[in-house]
Image 1 (cartoon, one colour):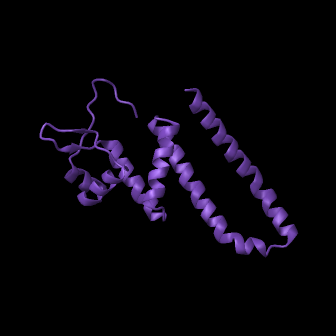
Image 2: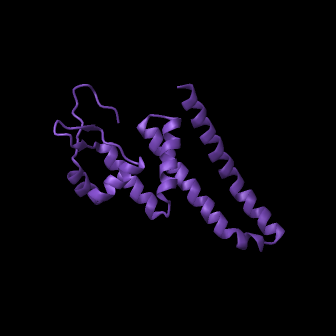
Image 3: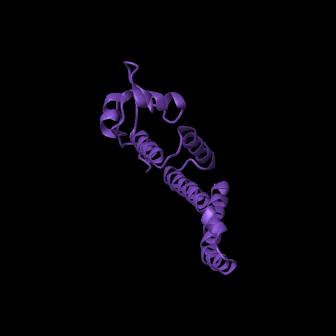
Length: 151
């Protein structure tokens, strides 16, 4: 969400950010050290100040950790999406898509032993059913990425 020039951004010191996010100040420091988070600015007393986007990012990190993503995988997702676009909403949507696709890949790998035991006709039916959706997803992503390169 873009703010106009007269709108105030809400800034939080680490203790308040910790309370709102449910994550300890020590964890916030750790995430900052890993490059997952960055203070929006510093106060006159040299306190780190974080914004609402940081709060959203912490919630996103905690969600991805609960989905069994490593902090390294999360950092790579954030940095690769940051290279694609700087628009917050698009970045968030792409991050959601990327994590969803990764979860699907993991589920498919878990299903591989079962898929190997399918009869040829069962496998054909299954692939015929999932191929159109997969192709549509890939096409939509390519369109999105193509549009972001034009901007």
